[in-house]
Structure formats: structure tokens, C-alpha cells
Length: 219
Image 1 (cartoon, rainbow, N blue to C red):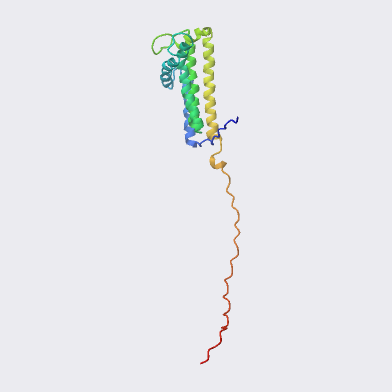
Image 2 (cartoon, one colour; image 1 turned 90 degrees about the vertical axis):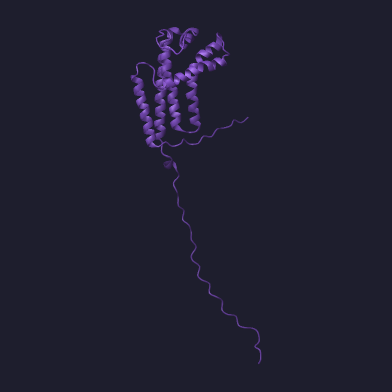
């Protein structure tokens, strides 16, 4: 049985002004995230909407169970969906070979880890304002998994993974957009081959008139 291979085209070029604007946005966002004390960034408004949609969606997959694996899947579904959406978008742009979209979706994917870590660290304290009523997701999950005493440690690791992933996404985009030679540089040089031109042909001289071989008529 032969495995089918997927051939990918070259990455689409990114103009230098677009690359500089995108990198400036990423660096400003990192400064904004580093100085934010609430743990909730403006991108998290979109993440929160996706998160809340994940609970009923995975609740359907868990068949509305109120205990066991189906219930755990419903509680975990919010975090799963907010990671699945940017990951699917990143895969889409990857196969389209668009580095700008791939880098942004990868950055978005890892940015989710920051607030997930904040949410994890609040499992015992329960100080965050929650959408709706009931216990927080990670209070339920850590209790089921007997990890409640390690909530802050897991949260620190999660946030560290988010920072490392965002930095890796920015570095890859900078290398791809600014560090790679442009398509014109990679093009093969045009080679001019000499063309042999035959010498001009001399005009053909008309043949001499042939003598009249017919006999002359008498008068």
C-alpha cells in the first residue's frame, strides 16, 4: 500500500511594510499583556464567546450527561473549543501557504493559554467573575482529577507555554517575512544564448538566354 504524498507550494511572499506593521502589532501586544494585571486581554472577549459556545456543543457530544465522561467533556468543552478554533484557522492558512494568517492564528492559539492559566489559578480562590452561575470549570476538573492542590503550579506552566508559543510564532513570522530572500532573488538567472545567423546569400544571377534551336523560316 502506497501512501499519498501532499505537495505544498512555496509560501506566498509578504511585503516588507506589511511584515513591519504585523510585527509592530505583536510587540505592542506583548507589552500590553506583560503589563496587564487583570489577566483578561482584549482578545479574550472573542475567546470568551467561543468558550461559552463550547459547553453546549460538547454537551451535545456528551449526550447531556450529568456525571461521568460526558459531563467532564461538557465542562472541558469550553477550553477545548477556544483552542480548536484558532488551531483550525492556522491549519487552513498553512495549507494556503499564507504566512501572515498562519502566524496570527498560531499567536492567537497560544494567547489563549494566558487566560486559561489565570482561570486555572482561580480554581481554589474563586475570585474571578464568572459568566452564568455554578462552579468554575477548573474547580470541577481539578477536583475530579485530584489536582486541586496543584492548580497554581499547572497555571504557571500553562501561562509559560503561552508566552513561549507567542514568541515562537512571532519569531517564525519575522524569519519567514524578513529573513527569507524574495521570490525575485530565488528566480533563476536569465541566460542569453548566442544565435547563429547564416551569412547573407548572394543574389542569384539569371542564367544566360538559351539559343533558339528552332530553324528559321524562309520568306
